[in-house]
Length: 211
Ligand SMILES: Cc1cc2nc3c(=O)[nH]c(=O)nc-3n(C[C@H](O)[C@H](O)[C@H](O)COP(=O)(O)O)c2cc1C
Image 1: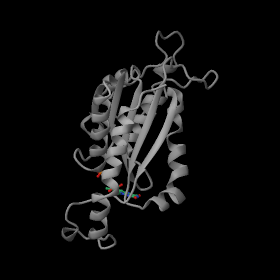
Image 2: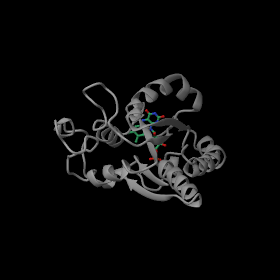
Image 3: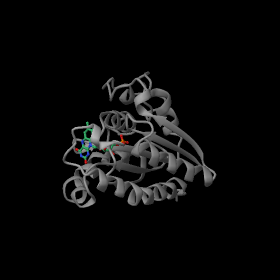
Image 4: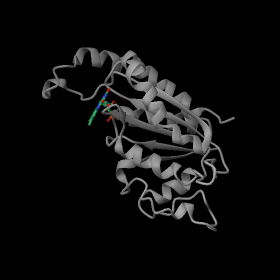
């Protein structure tokens, strides 16, 4: 089983990355072949609307033909069984790089003939979202719009599951920053308790076998 882990945070060792690394460990323990990608290391853009993936007579319809830093990653993703993508929430949405990735990976399989998917495989996608707000606020204010945001993953023919990880520790020493609306004590307590549980959940997510 081939699993791809995509870090959509610019930070390589913070909340999102830690959860994804735990998920990758779970996958490895379950015997999967894994690849870990930091999106912010790559030079790429969102869909360029080159329309190469919609040209009549192309040998591979489900392929992104735009050759930038994401090109080899997309080739790997289409061969995977399971995609685990993590993103911090920035202004109520996943990060710009995650949006760009989403456009690039889901526009090629979208058929403009009948809106079906031209992708022959099936990739289940788990989305790990980290954010400052508490879980209740996520449910009330973010969940529906973020679900809608990731709907294009349906063109990969699998299930898309969201996993919110709320109230994250944003910096290690709040006293050094103008961040008076947050309580460092509370953030550290959440980090030492529910964030540790989320790491275990991420491990399980990584180890899940597709059905
Ligand atoms: C530019 C920016 C915008 C943010 N916007 C939000 C937001 O709208 N809602 C929220 O809950 N957290 C927001 N955050 C906080 C991050 O989502 C949160 O700290 C996240 O866990 C960071 O992930 P990381 O530690 O993997 O980098 C924002 C952070 C940044 C840097």
